[in-house]
Amino acid sequence: MSGSVLVVGGGIIGLSCAFEAARRGYKVTLLEPDRIGGQASGAAAGMLAPFSENTEQPDAFFQLCLSSLKQYPTWVNAVEQHSGISVEWINSGSLNVFQHEADLLPVQSRLRWQNKWGARAEFVEGSALKGIEPNLSQEAIAAIYYPEESHVYAPKLVEALEMACRNLGVTFFERAGDIQSIELIRGGGVSLLTSRLLEEVRAERVIICSGAWTGMYEKWLDISIPIHPIRGQICSYEGSLEEVRHMVFSSQAYWVGKKEGRIVCGASEDVAGFETSVTERGIKRLIKSSERWFPFFSGRQTVHQWAGLRPATTDGLPLLGAVGEEKSVIMAAGHYRNGILLSPITALLVGDLLDGRSQSASLLPFSPYRFTYACNN
Ligand code: GLY
Image 1 (cartoon, helix red, strand yellow):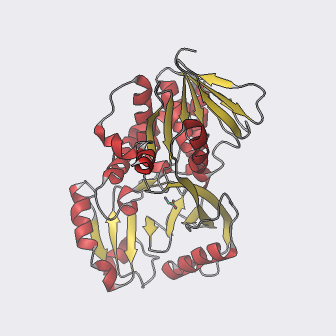
Image 2 (cartoon, protein in one colour):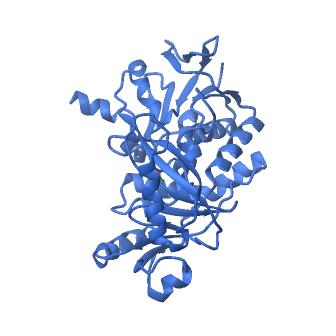
Image 3 (cartoon, helix red, strand yellow):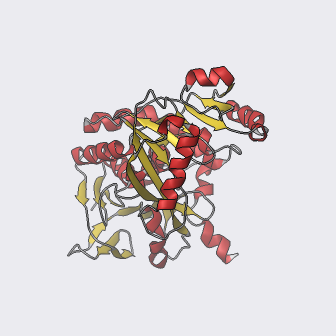
C-alpha cells in the first residue's frame, strides 16, 4: 500500500488532486459517490477572475486566487498534454461594469491596490468602453478592464482532467454510492466504506474533496466542518464571442462567451439545501439582467438552464491541510465560487502535503482545524 492515495470526490478539485498525485508517482484511486463532474464543477462558468471576485482587499484568499491564476498556463499545458483534450482556455480579459455614478466612488482605491498586485487594470468609459464591448447597453457608464482575467470551458476541463488521470493510471470508482464511514487505522492508513461498493477501499492517505457534502466527515474526523451548499442557477444563450467579447460582470450577473457558440449567464446565489433544480424566479432574474445590460438578448430564448451547488464555509475560505495525528487525511474542500480558478494551486499544495514538503505559513488561514479551535475557545 506504499504511496497509495484515495481521492474522494470527482469534481474539479478531486480530479486536480488526483492528477497531481498521479503525476508525482502516487498510486491513486478516485472515488465519486455519483457522477464525475456532476456537481459544482460541471455547472461552473469557468471564470479565472481573482480581481473581479475579490474587490475589497489583498487578503490571504485573494493571494491564493492570484497564485492559482499564475499557475494556469503551465497547469493547462500539463492537463492538455496528458489528456490530448483542449480545455478551451480563452484570454478574453474582463469588464466590471457600472451603472451609477455612486458605484464609481470605490473604484480608484480598488484600482490602486489591485494594480500593485499585477492586475494592470484600467478604468474605461464612454466611447472607449463602447469600442471594446460594442453591445453593452448605454446604461453601462464605465467599467474596470482586467486584461489578465480569462476563462476555460469547465465541462472540458473536467473531461480533460479525467482523461489525464486515466492516462496516468488512476483507478476510478464512479457512482460508488454514499460514504458510509471512514476510519483512520491506527499506525497509518484509512479505510472507507460506501453504500454501493461491496468492499472497503483502503489507502495510505485520503484526500477529501467532497465539495458541499464535506460536512458529513465531522462525525468521523472529530472536527468542526461548517460547509453548506449555495445554489448557483445559470443559463446559456446561443451567441458568439463577437457578441460578448469579454467576461462581463455587473452587480446582478455575469456573461461569458464560449467557443461552441454559447453565451453563459450566471449566477444566482440562494440557499436551497442540496436541491439542484432551477426556479422560474432565479432564471427570470438572469434573463432580466441580460436584457438590461445587453439589449440584443431581448427576445432571444435561453437554450439551457441548470444549477450547481457551491461549497461555502462560514468564513468563505476553503479548507486546505492535513488532519489527524498520522496526517493520513488531507482536506481540500470549500472553494465556494472559485473552485475552477483554485484547482491548480490546491492540487500543488496537496501534492506538497503528500510529499511531506514543509508548508508555508500562508496555508494557516485555510487550516481545517480553525472552526474546531474557535468552538473550543
Ligand atoms: N464563480 C462564479 C460563480 O460562482 O457563480
